Length: 115
Figure 1 (tube, rainbow, N blue to C red):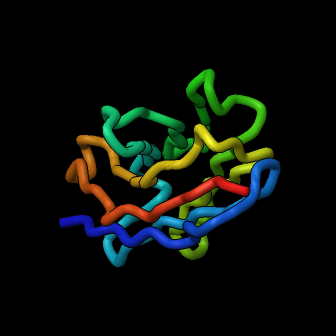
Figure 2 (cartoon, rainbow, N blue to C red):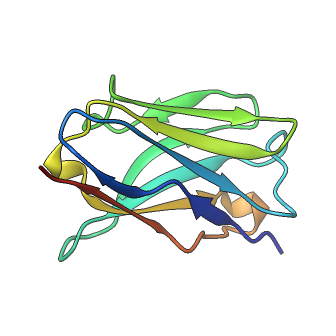
């Protein structure tokens, strides 16, 4: 079963940037699509972005133009580059494979945008 580990969260000022990473020992980026979700305190989990095995990407309107999802096929790592961060981006961010690849979730990484 695919298991995922995220990293890269932290505290950043508004307008700043962070890059999240997601990988796992059985994750194969040329086979599996990967979604990013986020969940702010007291709110429902929200879909953020997707990258397919063919590298096709999609984004939620709330992050389009500021976030970029990419992958390194050599290390099977998926990245979420987050620029121009806003306080409303504060949340726990999760990566998740597609259903065809075990529908596996990472443990989450906290992103806090605050001055």
